Amino acid sequence: MYDRTFGTDWEGTELTHEAAIDRAFALGVAAGCGRERPEELERILATFPGAYERSMVELAYDEGRTRALETPVEEPEAVWTELVDAAGTPRSPPLPSALPGALSELTLVRSPRTGPPSSLDLPRFLRK
Image (tube, rainbow, N blue to C red; front, side, top):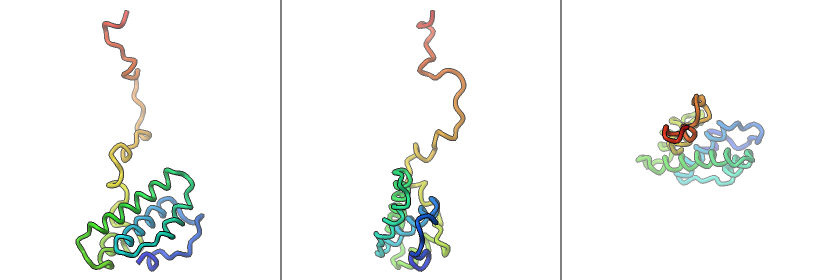
């Protein structure tokens, strides 16, 4: 399933972060169907030296495996078709359900609050 969709003759420099997430999710689905490929997961992980990127790839793999195991269909090909399309893209986002709320809503994209921080906003009786 995975080999047919993605192939294994890729170079590490060709793999973007999004493509790695999709491949890791698909590898997790294949593992949930009983067709593990740990060497391919290691190759994907090796393309990203940073801990954050590696953890996102591992989360996508775990999410794919979990969804495959939770799918009520028994036939591996049917599970694959239900979770991954013909181009290898997950049919539903691979990471949002795997991330806790604090990580899925990053505060870096919000504009900063105006005015003093609440820790410096002194109560009236402490002001002179």
